[in-house]
Amino acid sequence: MLPVLVACSKGEISIGFVVEELSVQLGLSVEERQQLLPSGMGTVFGNRVGWAKTYLGKAHLVEITKRGHFRITQRGIDVLKTGPQRIDNKFLAQFEEYRQFIDKARGKGDELSREPIPEQEDQKQTPDEVMRGAHLQIDAALALELLDRIRQAPPDFFERLIVSLLLSMGFGGSVENAGRALGRSGDDGVDGVIDQDALGLDRVYIQAKRYAAGNSVGSGAIRDFFGSLDRHKATKGLFVTTSTFSSSARETAEFLSKRIVLIDGEQLARLMIRHSVGCRVESTLYLRKVDEEFFE
Image (tube, rainbow, N blue to C red; front, side, top):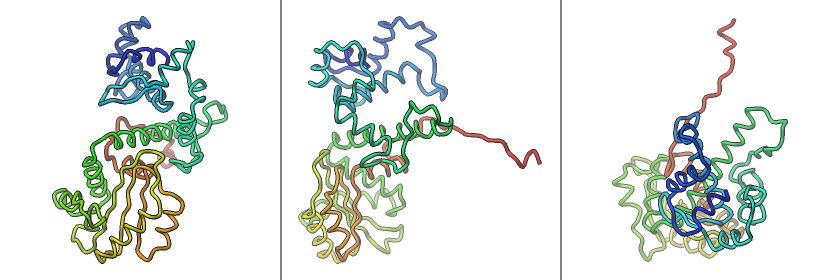
């Protein structure tokens, strides 16, 4: 992680350039540079550089600027001024943001998954548990990166994202119809409406709030949305945010007479991963066991 942080200390840099530069600095042979992952999707060294950038980002030592590019932050500059001999997970644990990321990845606190990830130093894990734990960590990192990308994107991108996600989940009739339904922002307190089914037998009204992390949606916003639903004579509403809902907001939604579903940033990211919106399958692992019927 230290070489990656040093590589971007002079300004914005591409991940590909870092991979090439560090390959030379570390004296990697051609064979070592070209060694592929088991999936064949990328090189081992490039993958490790990518993960180093990811972990540095979770500690807010670097930040993404655009696709495939990143740069050092002021915190990263301050870290380099201390002259660290090594940067690893233990070193990054001094930063609260990184600890929160690890806790979420392991299923603690505001969990991205309700299944805890075993500690990597636990030698009592079975191979299945190690693989499952690694998979949950990868998904946790992906979820946080998706939210970062959404917050950095233009406002209309958030609307298009919701269209894609709802269509992937089976709402609406077509991309064209859904696109016309959403994105019709106005003064009526509703950001969009989409058919609940292909026939349009029922509709769901939508409120979308793209907030920064730490800026929670309060109960007042829920009551305003409820009033908007009432004006539209609607019975169902979906409130989506990239941040969180306060406890009073959730209580308000629970006790109102209309059904209002709240989707916070973490749940939004999980739904995107589940329905492959904004992400794709890079490789597939098959776990095989003995076919008992074959030997009978």
